[in-house]
Image 1: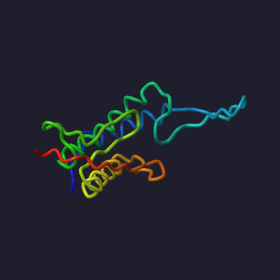
Image 2: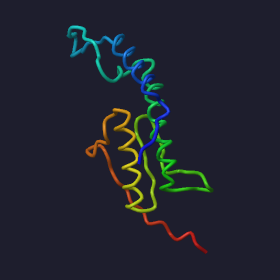
Image 3: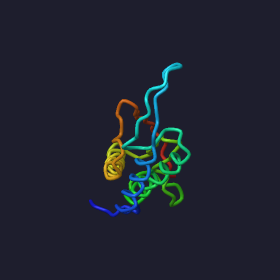
Image 4: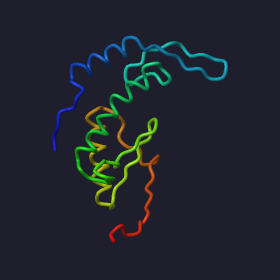
Length: 134
């Protein structure tokens, strides 16, 4: 499957250039500061733009999950993906559907040059719901 992301390559490259050329930081350990250095990838944690840029990128993941038509729906509304800060919750009616959603997320994150899902920080929950059929 291939798709076109709403973030164009030129806009992505421009944002990376601006952030890389203007992001200088240092490390503080106790009361000792390192020499300043330039960030060449990613964005500074705690930066004013950081949450907004993350939201811009992560919206693509949500859009791809919704477009996959896989997962859980409530009254025709997709509830397959829920976000809180940098956490993603995927809801699926089966293990197979969950695996499909994970593939969708991995593919979009890879396209965005973001870290792939960290399995050491991931968890799977399972609940058998009573039948809703009457």
